[in-house]
Length: 73
Image (cartoon, rainbow, N blue to C red; front, side, top):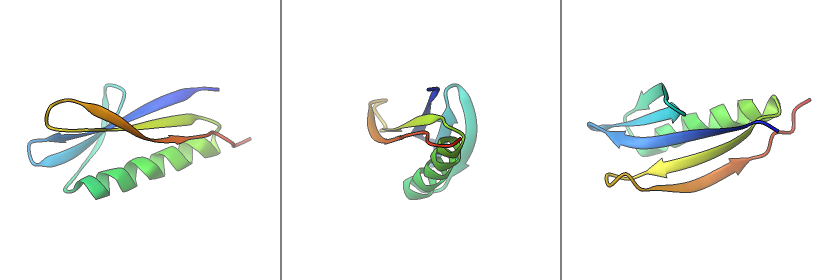
């Protein structure tokens, strides 16, 4: 099963959402960034792709907060 990783990081007063090296969007708050990333994860799961979601902090440390299982057909 394919796996993708989404990263949410604070950058210059916004929160970036990245798929690997690709910037998908920036949001004003962490919660809006998480909501966007969760929507991407749900869409991926519908296509059978597992998503790992990581939240970063100002020190560059990441913690995994979500793994969605792909279940689409």
